[in-house]
Each structure stands twice: as structure tokens, then as C-alpha cells.
Amino acid sequence: MNTALSSKRHYVDPRPFDPGKTEPVGAESESFYRASSWQLMWWKFRRHKVAVAAAFVLLAFYLLVPFVEVVAPYNQTKRHGDFLYAPPQAVHLMHEGRFVGPHTYRYSYSFDLESFRRVYTPDKSKPQPIRFLCRGDTYQFWGVWEMNFHLVCPPEDGTMFLLGTDRLGRDLLSRIIYGARISLTIGIVGIAVSFALGLFFGGLAGYLGGWVDHVIQRMIEILRSLPELPLWLALSAALPANWSPILVFFGITIILGLLDWPGLARAVRSKLLSLREEDFVKAAELMGASKQRIIARHLIPNFMSHLIASATLSIPSMILGETALSFLGLGLRPPVTSWGVLLNEAQNLAAVQLHPWLLFPMVPVVIVVLAFNFMGDGLRDAADPYH
Image (tube, rainbow, N blue to C red; front, side):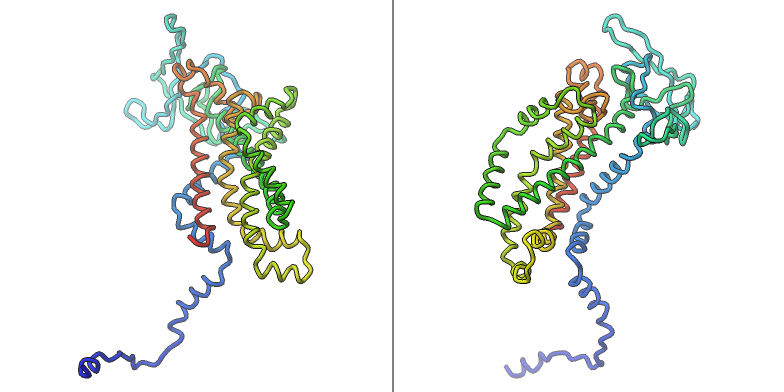
């Protein structure tokens, strides 16, 4: 027994201890423990590959918003009377076995008396090269400067309808690009209204408690018990028909923000109820800090990452709400161009059966909503301290 124990002796390294060799490991540990909550959230978010990819997709969409006039090949109001309901034109690189660069073929059409449809046939005898970094349709950049510079332009004396045209011969791709400005902006502005109301009412209910909490909770329950879509329709229909497009835009935005804040207020209230009993809050109260300062400087910053994740998940509902209202004809109206307004033209069976390319505006809606959901899931996991 003693022989067996004596044979299992501990190994002792005879070399002298060098504290410098452990410094790199200690430095990494120190940087981890000294990192702020935002740094920890960013490190965890980077490991969520799908969320990072979704964030890049959204970044590309929102970088497009200020420069839609430059990116769109046509002006959104330009009509082509000879190309009503023209199908999408394909982009080719090769012509008769040789490389000639990106080009399209001119459309020639005939009227089919049996189906009462225009039949478009590409004329492949002569390629029409697509122009890049060129002069095209004139537009008012940001409503101030008159410009005609485009990243991509149709061929000289030719056409480039990559996603087809609508009933007035307007290029659908250009109108989808222009519609991104309204549809993406309305989500950001709407969540700003919802965010402000949610922080205010949720902060009061969570920190003050008592009868204030009861009144706010009953108000939230009443709002959440109302059917959402009929309420949207009723409030949108109440907007005056003679309002300008800008006023209608802000009216729809405020409606979406007013109906979305109860969920965020509930989240703020629950967080404040758990944080208001912490020692740092008691210390701030003993030092004479006001209730407004305690809420704004001590409580809300401690769970701001959770609020950002919640807000990110709420933006898709704003975009879908505007799209649904405009699709039903009760939201934004022409001449304003949004994805919902474009889909309003595809709400009959003939459009789906005869002109299916009119449904293309729903593709960016699906992409943006999925990207927001994926990024929101990544932010929610990164903001969770127990994840």
C-alpha cells in the first residue's frame, strides 16, 4: 500500500517560475473582465454568422436609401407608351458566339387578338450595350440639385426593363428601388415613436409602481385586446383624403408607432421592476438623485441592449404594416412610391396570371423582414447575459 502511494509522486518542474510567460493569458483575461457590456455583446454577436450576414444585407439596403435616384436606371415616373406590361428583359454577355459585354435586345411587339395581349419578341439581330456611370433621366437629388448621373443606364435608343414594366409602361426595377426609401424609412421612424412611448410609459410603470403601474397596465391591456388589422384600417381611413403625400406618410408612421409601443413598455416595466431594488439604485436615491435621473442615467442604460434587440424585432412589423395598408389602398397613395403601393397593382387574378412580374415588389419585403428577424435573433442572444 505504502509502496503504491510512494510510486505516484507529484511532478515538480525544477525550472524557476517566470511570471512574464503568463502575461499574454492574463492580458486576455483582463481584457475580457474589463470589457463593457457593449463589447461583450459585440463579441457574442460576431459569432452568430447568420445574424452578421443579415446585418450586411440590411446595411446594403439602407445605404441604398439616400442614393435611389443614382442607382435606379430610370426615373420612377417615366412612362414608355410602347412597352405596356412588357416582360422582364434578359441581360446577355455573348452575341453570336463572341463576347460583347452586358447587353439587351430590342423588343418588338404584336397584338394578339385572341388573348387581347401584347406579345413581346426580342430582336436578336443587333445587341444593345448597357451603359455604366452614364448620363440618363434627369432627377432632383434630395429634392435640391438637378442631376442626371446614374450608375447604370439603358442602351442608347434602347430599353432595359430587367423586371418588366407596369400598366403605364414604367420600369418596375426603378420603382422598387425608389420604393425602398419610403418602406425602409417608415420602419425606422415608426420604431422611434414606439421606442419613445415605450420607454416613457414603461419607465413610469416599472419605477413608480402603485396606481401609476395599474393605470398604465390597464391601458396596455385595452390596446392589446383590440384587433390589430381592423384598428389599422380604421385609423388609416380616418386620414383626410386631401392630405399631401408627406402628411399621409407621417400619419401612417404615427399610427404604426402608437399601436406598437405596448409590447416594448411591458419589457421596460419588467426590467425596471427587477433593477429598482439593486444596491446602485438605493445608493443613487440616498445621494438625492431625482426619479428622472435614476431612470434615465442608471436604470435604462443597464438593459439598453435588450431594448435594441426588441426594437430590431419590431421594425419588420412596421414594414409589413405599411405594406398591408398600402396594398389595401388605405395607406400611402400615388404619387408616393412604396413596396405596398407597387403591390396594390397586383391584387387581381389577371395580374398574377398574365403579368406575374408585378409581384416582384414582395421579394425585397421578404428579404428585409427575414434579415431583420435574423439580426434581431442574434442581437437578442448577444444581449442575454445567461446565453
